[in-house]
Length: 209
Image (tube, rainbow, N blue to C red; front, top):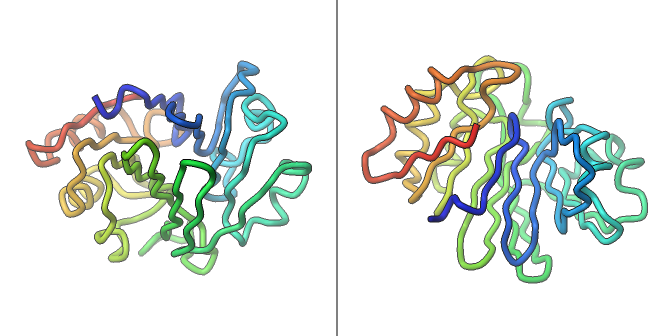
């Protein structure tokens, strides 16, 4: 199954195992795994940029992918590593992994301004396209994303609420949808259940939290 190689430990802290071990926004990772081939950061909030977790997952040759606007915030955490600083629309290849940066911002909330140019990512690995949305609302640009697996925030307050996230998923129509960013800072299991009810029946919803 497309989601079998995906782990979400909390919030948007995602690990994908494939040709490379790819981690998004490591947060509350308490064990010293030192396993990440690629670490992608979406933005600078504490539950997405967690220095202690970065220490536990990075290794000597880890490659970082970071919003260009976060150069100063990550400077000390990425010292000695290869770092790609991206803006929305940028695309790069890191070995067998293709990465496209996509926008992530709020439409009617102040927490994630569009001007910050924070990011979500579409990562293609082993012929599967994984969309990790970051903290975002359902901006029009996102409705054109093509992916096989969509990992979208549903907790509300700082991101989409469950019905908004379900509507976005139904628009882009991946094969698998994984709700994230609930059950910790904001959002609940009830939000995940509502999301699952509202997603189209031919899209498999897999809850990892």
